[in-house]
Image (cartoon, rainbow, N blue to C red; front, side, top):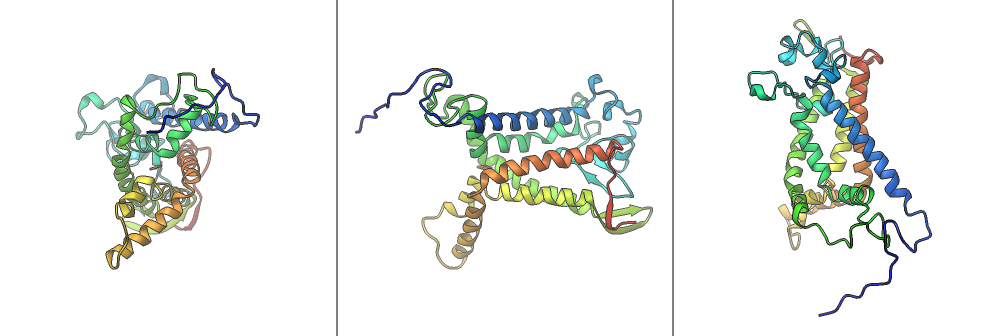
Length: 294
Ligand code: FES
C-alpha cells in the first residue's frame, strides 16, 4: 500500500502559489449561474398566486377560473404566446400543468405551473458532472481551482448528503423524455388555428423553440450517464446490435467531448426562449410569422 504524500501548499481561503488569473473562471461561472438561477426562480414564481407578483402573471388575472384549460390560456398568462392562433409555450412552463384544475389537490393551487416541472431540469443540471465541478468551484470554493486552498479543509469527495448526486442517472431518464415533450411543443408552434381552419406556419417563436430542443439534445445526449447507458456497459462491441450500440456510443462521445459548451449554451437558450415568450406576451415584442400561418 502506497502512503499518499501531501505537497506543501499555502493554507486559507483562496491562498495559492499560483500566479495566473485562476479566479476568472469560477468568478465568471458564479455570475452566470447566479443570474440563471435568479431569473428561473423569478419566472417560475411569477405565475404563482402571490401578491408580490400582482400586475405580472396569473396572480393578476381576473379570469383565472376561465384559464384552467389550455384552450383558454391566452386570457391570462405570460407563459405562452397565442398570436394568430399559434401556440408558443415557454420551456420553463412545459409541459403546462395548471394548478387550479380538478386534477390537482387544492392545497397546491397557489403554485405556478413552472413549479411542477422545474424540478426535472433543475435536478438534471444540478447533479450533472460538469455543473457539479462548476458550482463546487464557484459557490463553495471547494476548491475554487486546482492548487488553491479550500475554506473548509480538504476536499473529501461526495459523501453523506452529497450522495444524492447519484440520482443523476434517474434525472437523465426524465430529461430524455423531456426532449420529446419539448419537440412536441415545437410541432404545436407550427400549427395555426382559427375556427375550424388549421394551417402550417413558422414564426420566430417556432425557431426559438426548435433551437432550444437542438441545444438541449446536444447537452442531454452527451451526458456521461446517457453515454454509459448506450454503450459503456459493454466490455466490447460485436456485430449486429453491438454495431448499433457502438455507433450510438461514438455519437454520444462526440457530444460528450464538448459537454461543458452544450451545458452553458443550452442553459442560456432556455432562459432566452422564456424571455422571448415573456417579451411577446407583455406586448414589448411581436412574434413575427416568417412562413405560412393564417
Ligand atoms: S453529466 Fe452532464 S448531463 Fe449528465
